Length: 309
Image (cartoon, rainbow, N blue to C red; front, side, top):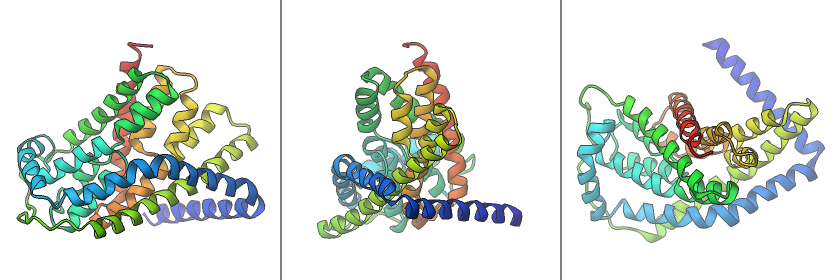
C-alpha cells in the first residue's frame, strides 16, 4: 500500500510539474485553451446548469419534495437499497445531468437525509449525464441523429442503474435518515451556494480543456495514432472525446462515447469530487463503480447501435 501511494504521488507530481512547465514555456497556446474552456462553460454549461442548481436547492426544502420522496421510497429501497431521498436525487440527476446530482447528494447528506451506509450507493445512482447533453449535444449536434442520441442516453442510464442494482445490500439498512422537516426555501442562500458551485465547475472545465490540449500535443510528439490521442482526451474531458469519435460513427465509437459520458472523464470526476467528498463519499470505491458503469454502458450501446448502423 505504501508503495502504491508513493507511485501515485510520484505520477501526480510529474503530471503537475509537466503541466506547469508547459504553461510557462507555451503560455499563449495553453491560456487560449483555458479561454476556450471558459467560453464553453459560459455559453453552454452555465445557462443549462445554474438554473437547475438553484431550483434543486429550493425544491429539496419544499413539502412537495417530501411527498415525492415518500412515494419513491418503496421502489428505491427495493431496487437499489436507498431511501426515497436517494431516489429523488437519482431522478433529478437523470433529468438535469452533471453536476446537479452530485450537488444534490451533498445537500441531502449535510441535512441528514441520506444515511452514511447508503451514501456511496446514492452517489453512484445520482451521478448521471442528462438528455440535453446526450440527445441534444451529442445525438443531434455531433452525430446529426436524435435516434443515436437516444441510444446513448438509454445505454448510459442502463449501465448506471444495472450496476447500482448489483450493489443493492441483501440485508436491511442499519440506519435511516432523520425525520423530514420541511424548511423555508431561501432564494438568496440557494443563489449564493449555486453560484459558488457553478464557478467550481467552470474552473474544472477551463483547466481540463488545457490539459486535454497538452495530452494531444504529447500524443503528436510521440507520434501516437489519432484514435489513441482521442481516447486519452476523452478520459481527460468527455466532450472532446465524444467530438472526436463522433466524426466517424460506428458501434465502437458510440460505445466509447457511452463510456466517456458514464465514467465522466477526469474533468467531471473532479467536479463531482468537490461535492461528494463533503457528503462522506470515499472516492476510490466511487471511481471503481463509475468504471464498471462506464464499461457496461459501452457494451450495451455497442449492442444497440449495431442494430441501426
